[in-house]
Image 1: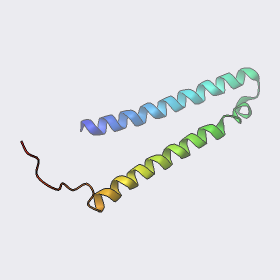
Image 2: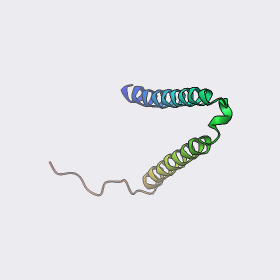
Image 3: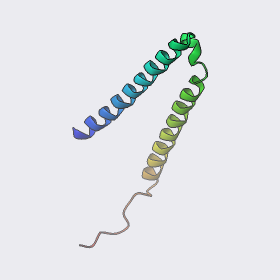
Image 4: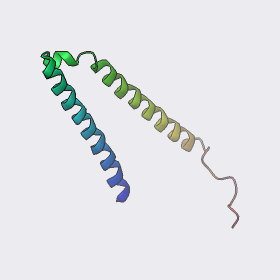
Length: 81
């Protein structure tokens, strides 16, 4: 149960941080007068970061399942006390 709490907590914190960033960016852009159009230069970086993070997470999950399914994670002998 505690593991799920940590995962949900990290996910919520990430979404909250992104929401705060969007709010700050919109507020800063509204002072300039362009509104959402003023945010156009930063959206490619935000989208690129999300895509790269998702690709890295997907690759690491694939690597973990690949090694587990092909026996690379099996123990060869018993641990000695």
